[in-house]
Every structure is written in C-alpha cells, then in structure tokens.
Image (cartoon, helix red, strand yellow):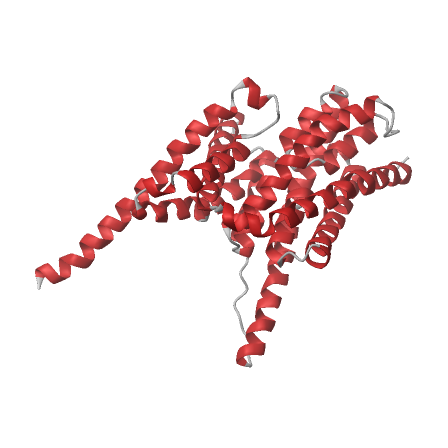
Length: 357
C-alpha cells in the first residue's frame, strides 16, 4: 500500500522538479540574452532584450530543442504563460498619469485615434485581405497599434493563441519598428513631414512600435521632441488596459456564440484579463509615488528580465514550419499597417495640431 501511494507522490515531485528546471533554464537563457542585447552593435539598433530573446529562443527551439529534457517543457510553458501575465501587470510601473497630463489632450487624442484605427485596419486587412486567422491578425495589429512586443504578449495571453502566431507578430514589430527608427529622422530632416517639434513628438510617439525605437528615432530630432514622443508612447501603453478589456469581451462573446450554436446554450464565464487590472493598479501606484524611486527602478529591471524570459520561452515553443504557413501573409499585413501608420498617422497628427492650435 505504501509503495502504491508513494508512486503518485514521486511522480509529482519529479514533475515539479522538471518544471523548476525548465524555469531555471529559461532564466539562464534570458540572462545570456540580456548580456547579448547590451552589446553596442545590438543596442545601437534599438533591439530590446525582448526581441533578442524571442529570436534566440526560436533558434534554440528549432535547432537544439531535442537536447532539452521533456520534463522541462512545463517550466518553459509556465514562463511563456503565467510569468508573462505577472510581467505585463508590473509593466504599468513605467507609466504615470502625471507624465500623460504633461502633453495633455493632443497626446491623448493622437494616441486614442492611432490605437483604435490601427487595430481596426490591421484586423480587417489581416482577416479580409490576407485571409489570416483572427488571432494572428489581432496580434499583428496590436503590436503595431500599442506597444510592440509587450502588447503582443498581453494579447497572446488574453487570446490564448499559439506561440508561433506571437512570433510572427513580433517579427513584424522588429522589422518595421527598426525601419522607422532610421527612416523617420531622415524624412523629418528632409522636410517631407512638415512637422514642428510638437508635431514630430506626436507623430514619432504615436506611430513607432517599441518604446526604445521611439526614443532612438526622436533623439535625432531634439530633446523636446524626444520628451513629447516618449510621453505619447506611454499614453499608448496606458491604452493597453481598456483595449484588452474590450477584446476580452469580444472574444468571450464570439466563443459564447459558437458554444451556443453547438450546444444550444450561451452561458460561459467571462475571462477578465486580471493582469490588465494589475497593470492599471501599478500605474496608479506609480502616479501616487507610493514606492521609492530606487524600488521602482529595481522592479522595472526585474520586470524587463521577466518579459525577456517570457519572450525567450515563446521563442522556444515556436516552430518555423508553423510560421511558414502564414509568414508572408502576416508580414504583408504588417506592411499594410506600416503604410497606414506613416500615411494615416501623419494625417492624424496634422489634424490634431490644427484642432488644438
């Protein structure tokens, strides 16, 4: 009897140990990625550890995955799912309501119009023109509309989509966000954008994908433009919460409709993205200066590392064969969004400047 009862217990301990080993492996991988991303050759390209993490993870997952014990897979999955949600929540400590108020209504209007229109254009173009599935189209649109890889991670968690779909969306963010960092300053200096300092800040912050890419591009204009662009960008990050709540309701409604069609009933528990509420709570904490600056700085550093772990784990779970199936279509959707962000974003910026002139 004791031998029989000890077998499940031994199996549970082995499973727990395997999961912990998997998490530790991802952490060590993320630490190496962080060091790699700090090299000048990579840092100067504006590539954050998150981006390097998913690329490095994908390379390992497709070339060397067989060398990882099968029991570690649970730890990799934990990093790509639960740890991801926690990290996205703490991302709110980077945003404060005071900073958003500095730019005022022009920055808020620019951010809201850009985010909403880009999500609509991206989802429509992805599903109707490029025939992508809903999740891939939404992830690609979210990465372009809100805050790059961090938004893709947040949406991936809400949609509970496959890792390769997130990888495709992040690939679009990397390609077109990096291009923006070099192209925007050239267009501005050539006089083709017809924007003053405020307009440049609104345009750069409102349409470039990643926070680091925004800073890198705007720093080639002026310190004032960089300040405005950063605040506008963080306003877009702030919009992650209401957008996630709306998307969660939409996804739940679609699932409820499908469930009712198959089973004749529509009851289904609403999956509220708790990490989005946590994100908002962290914004409030940061706005009220409830934590010492050194503590906030330390937590932000740990949060970046946790996000890097999540991205690395997503990369490990990604398969190139899956990406090939929709890769060109997803990339084309990203290009359509990029054209919209430049053309439509410029028109929106001109309109906002005139409105608040």
